[in-house]
Length: 136
Image 1 (cartoon, rainbow, N blue to C red):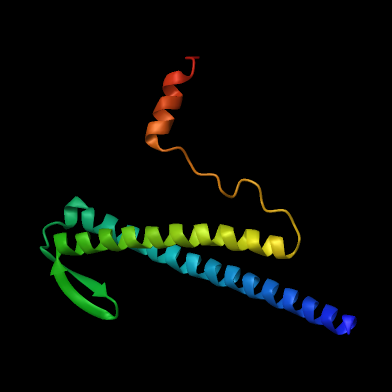
Image 2: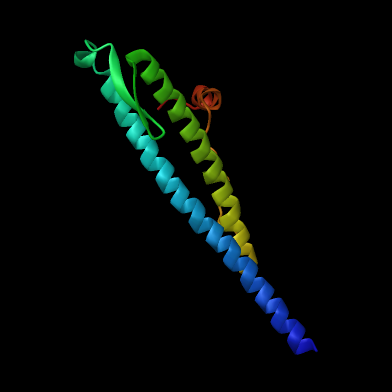
């Protein structure tokens, strides 16, 4: 009886480890796709902001699978909103990814990666630190 329960326990551990590993890989592919979309948006925004192209009032823009002619300012506004949304989604996926990787390492009985929960200083913290450092 104990050998069957041990085998079952091993299979459950392997199954949960594989499920977490699969989710890590899915998140990674989603991050790659979102980053590609973010770069394309960035290129489109830069192209619309060029001064030599402002003579045209309307531009062709894709909205989903449709091609639509919009005012330049409206298209730029939509692209910037989309860019912000993509960046939020990327941040969420990156934080989820850190949790999943540490969960996977925990299931494999490894210690979590150190430094995965480090956050950059915001402007106020950085200015306070700079103000208190001696000038070199």
